Image (cartoon, rainbow, N blue to C red; front, side, top):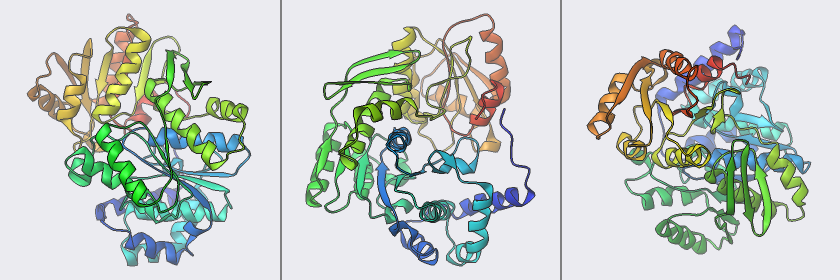
Length: 422
């Protein structure tokens, strides 16, 4: 079970940080640069690999970090959002930043944060970069928060950029079509800095190559891995004639691993395959088609857009060859129409739930939205914990695969229900 910090000071500080979300998302990097300047410009004190994309960027970041740690480097990792604790966002050699270091940063820079009116993500980005500089990391692996061009992380003068598969998401912010979104993601590409490019739609691929060419960025194109074989224990695949095996499940994870391997080989050409193999095996990245029960095939996945959900469902089908039971929750800002099309006729039984306290749609609202898109035979259980209890009861007599999906925000409830130690 997960145990929260009992520090009154730390919990009060987290409340302060989360309240910065009221400032929303600001367009531009000026606030981030200003805050970083007041922090001593830590972003200039370490090497970095910068990663953007729609799906797989968190997994790819974690894989790169694990391999480089296995190679003996001191590695910073900055990702978002977190599953359980804020501290997960900022790690050095796999260990999350301590409560005391978070308190120390905010105490030192609270007046700067308030003066600049820094947003939540601008503040956490500055915190991460200051922490990495203080820890003298050899390399920081940094995932964008949203988009790329105007994302707070794009203050980096990175040593390598990576773009994972791009699909439709956050259309209200990044653009109405996939090329608009792709252009925003491409904003992390830097002049004369190499780019690792995951498989993309043809139009996106052409656009990214054009942008990279204009910036004289050498592009390493990652071909889809071959001979991909899934099992309940992981995924085997071939990349450039070499065999690899990851504990992560799914054809999409074979792609993420291939992209990560390519990135590591460019950043560290002398790295040995044996080191890569061990690094891949040691990856710990919860919430990605994660099995929650030894006895029953119950899985949790944070996929929350249509493309990510399609990849997750394909992986389950590859393993079990039957329709699963599902519990779906969604945030109010998500593209219900696209998700509805992705999940239609894909479940034997689909339970719709929610939690408005977590910023999710209520089960009733989500059911109505999905029904209006043509989905039928939905079971609405409004309280998420009741939905988990319901599914546990079903699984006492049933062995069909079950998927809990749609949001990072229910991770704590899922992990606590199934006794997962985070």
